[in-house]
Length: 352
Image 1 (cartoon, rainbow, N blue to C red):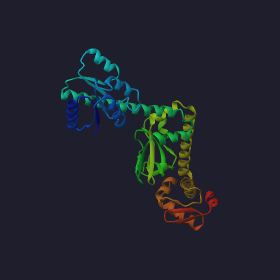
Image 2: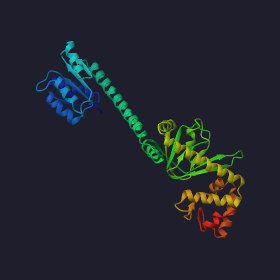
Image 3: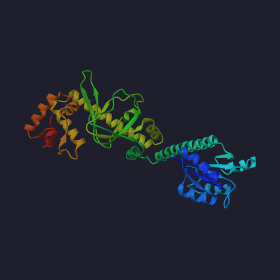
Image 4: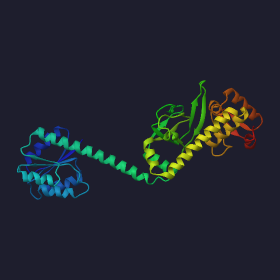
């Protein structure tokens, strides 16, 4: 409910105007003169002020001058209501910064229309100011982004956060690449589907990892799919915003391209392992990869589905299970349900 302050020394007109506005669902506060009006304006901070000009103690002109000089009240829409109809009086009121000047007697429709339009204009101005502040803050923040850690902070400050349940899709291969993502909490996997419908896992992403960075270079589509491996929180920023940041920061651009190159190299090695590595070697490398990503040290237990392990290794799930059983018998691994713990790190690294 909008609050309107009526400042009018004529009791009947003041009460009549208040009644009209209350019937239109406005909250109304009244004052009999400029001095009392100034006090109530400071306390109530109304959404709009209706004010007479000729009043005792302080007239409307002096009141508007006073409120225009104070930070809290200077933006409040201000409408004069006066019997002074000469052009010089209207001009004076508008020159002082009034939003409108209504001459008495004022018709009810004209009064309500003037109030409604001034309140709407004020709301639009507030929205525009808020947008300008956000844009200015973002532009200023660009200057503070010097490395990847600063970029991650930018994502946290200005990005849009969304939570995904296990198995939910963050984006699919072939979709338009409109956003760049940062994993805030949890783990995701990126994968491609081969011609036989088999899922080939390319990478595992944990908290603090970027996803979809290659979309900066390729302006069309994502080349892989990404889903949540557990409940995750993802922050995304529009790709064009990140491109603006990189245009003004060559050092960061180099870091981003280096990161993209490292990711592509890792994917290449992963695909080579899938193509040429022995089944035992594929399984060992995959367990080491997951252990490195999902735990603090290699010998910590990791909780992972056999299907995801097989997808990364590029082998059938049944073959992976047989190999895991063999590693368990040889004392290399301890297996309890989905939990896998490396007992002999050297032997696992030495598997051929």
